[in-house]
Length: 592
Image (cartoon, rainbow, N blue to C red; front, top):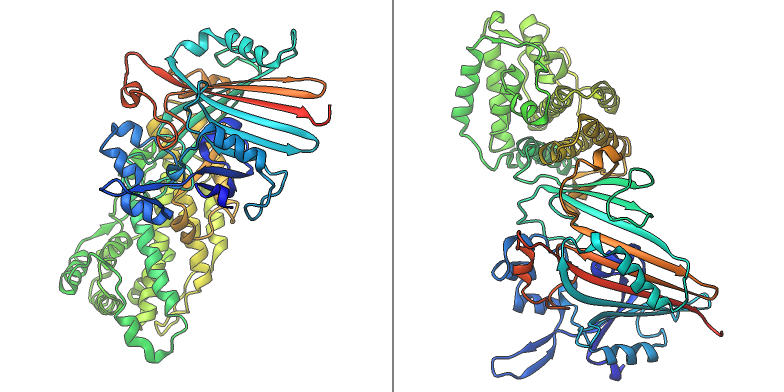
C-alpha cells in the first residue's frame, strides 16, 4: 500500500457525475487523490479525514454561495463526499490501473470496474479513466471535457458527432445504433439522497425525460418514451400544503407522547401531565375564555361547497367555521397535557349549561368529543372526569378526524373521484373510539392511530405532488389526473412506500414517475437542460460506444475540474451555452 499513499481507494457506488453519463448504477473501485491541508506558513500537513476537511473548509455548498451566483449553487447536486474527490494525474491513474490486483479494498474483486478521477491537464482533458476485465472482455472508459458550445450546436451537428464516433471505430461504414436522451427542467432540478435541501427555495422538482432512437434532435411524434419525474420536499415552508403539514406534525408529536407513555403505570400520571404539547402555547385562562366565547356563538354548519377546481383555491377554502374545527384550534395550543385535561373539563362543564339550540353541527358522530357533547345534551352521558391519557386520546382522535376531512375536501374540490376509495380505506383502518354511559372512554388503539396517521401522511404526499405540477406546469387536467392516480397507487396502496414519519426524517423528499404522451411533451417550449447522444457500434469481437453530453450546468464539481468563466457561462441568458462532456467506451475480446 506504500506506493498508493497519496490516493484514496474505495469500493462504492458510481459517483453522480459518472452515473450521469453511463445511466446505470453499479459498484466500482473509485480512485482519487487525498485532500491536502496547507498551513498559513505553506507547510503541507498531509491528508485529513472527511470530517476534519469539512470542519476546516466549511460545507462546499455554503462556500459556493459566496462565490458563484445563486442559480448555480442551488443546482449543484453533488454529494458532500464528491466535493472531496481530488483528481490525480493521468499517468498516475494509468499506473494504478496497470498494477491493480483486486485486493486493495474490501468487497472488490479482480473483475470490478476501476475508475480513476483525473485532473484533465493532458491534451485531451481526460477527467475519468476507467478499466475492467470481465467475461473475457477488456473494457476501457475515457471521459473528457470539451469547450462550451452554443446552445444550438447539438441541433445542427448530429452528423458531425456520428462521424466522430466512426473515427473511433476505425472500421469502414460500421453499423451504428443511436439513442437520444433529452431532459427538460420545468421546475427545480433532480435531487439525490445526499442533496442539501435545508436552504433550498424550491419545494421539489419537475423534470421531463424523453428518449428515442432515431437520429434527430427533437422528439419524434412516434417511437419516443416520455416520462415526467417528480420530487417533492415534504414539509417545505414554501409549499401551499405547509400549514396542513404543520398540523400533521403536531398530531404525530401528540401520538408519540402517548406511545412513549403507554407502558408506564398509573403512578406515572404526573409524568404525563407534564409532557409538553404545544411549543407555542396560549395561557389556560385565555383558552377557557375562547371555549366560553365559542359556546355563546350559534354554529350553523353546512356541508362545505366544492366550488374550487384547483388546489390553491381548495386550500384557501379550508375554513374553520365548524364547531369541531374550532375546538381543535383551541385545544392544540394547550401547553401541557395537564392543561389539556383541565380545559377539556371546562368544556364539558360549560356544555351542560349551554342551551341545546346554541350548537348545531353535522359531524358529531365522526369524533368522540362530538359524540360526548351530543350525549351530554341528550342526557345519555354524565359530565366526564377525564384522565390525562384520555384527554390526550381525545385530542388525537379530534386531530385525525379533522385532517382526514381536510384532505378529502381538497381532493374532491380539485375534481378527482378517488375520495370514496380513500374514505373506504380510512374506515377500514380502525374502529372509532367510543364512550360509555358513564362518560368513560374505550382505550385508543395506538396501532390503529398510527395506521391512520400514516394514511394522512400519504394523502398529504399525494397532494404535494398535485400542487407541484399545478403550480409549476402548464399541462392539461389529464396530466394532473395521471399524477393523482400514480401517487395513489404508489403511496396509498403500497404500504411499504412510506410506513411512518421516521422515513421522512431520513429522506425528506419523495419521488414519482408519471408517463406522458407526445401531445404533452410538445407543450414544453424551453431548451433542454440536458441533451445527450449515445452512438454504439458492435463488431465481431469488439464494441465502441461514444456519448456526447450537453448540459446547461457542469456535471463535475469544481474540485475535479475548473471551468473557465463558470459563473458567466451559466448565467448568460443572451448567449446560452452548453457544457460539453464526451465519454468513449471500448470493449475488446481478450486473446484475439
